[in-house]
Amino acid sequence: MRLSGVAPESFVDGPGLRYVVFAQGCPHECPHCQNPGTWDAGAGQEFSARQVARMLRQHKKTRRGITFSGGEPFAQAGELAQVALAARRLGWDVVTYTGFTYEELIGSDDSDIMALLSASDILIDGRYVHELRDAPARFSGSSNQRVIDVARTRESGRVVLWEEGRDAAAAPKIGRT
Ligand code: SF4
Image (cartoon, rainbow, N blue to C red; front, side, top):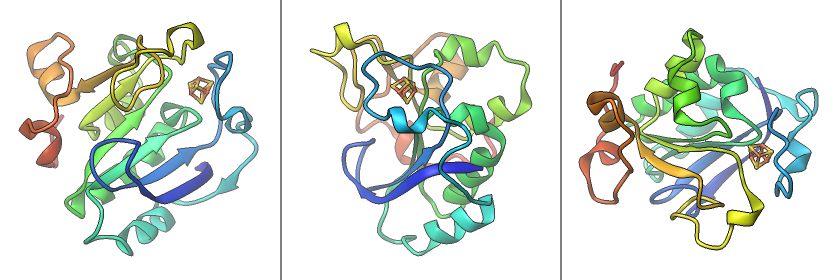
């Protein structure tokens, strides 16, 4: 996989203290994107899922979870899903940012996309819309982006927003489909 970088310590990319992995490459090209350096899929640096898993293990006891940001994580969904499962084996939860909407992802027949979606506790979806930047939800950049509780959404068949303190994001559910 190609990454633009990692941030081993973040409090702003999801609940609690998190390890953030920034995917390289983004097809969305949102105007006023804060990370246009992540757009070029050929830039950044190559990592294997095993390498990233080793990096996570160094912080095993001190992080609540991993966050995939971008770039577009779902453009490299297969390998990032492997990293997500490695994080879950550490007892971490998984937050994934995407420029796609939940509806676009759930309609895909790509098994890699479904694997990363299934491994995510929270999905923050949708492109960044600069005109909607004034009152975003917590952890999002513009108010069209939703902070979605993935397990509850898939169980109920309608989008359920994540709420701090509910068990879905706090308790990893390894093997959920
Ligand atoms: S999806 Fe994110 S990284 Fe991609 S262009 Fe939009 S704001 Fe930038």
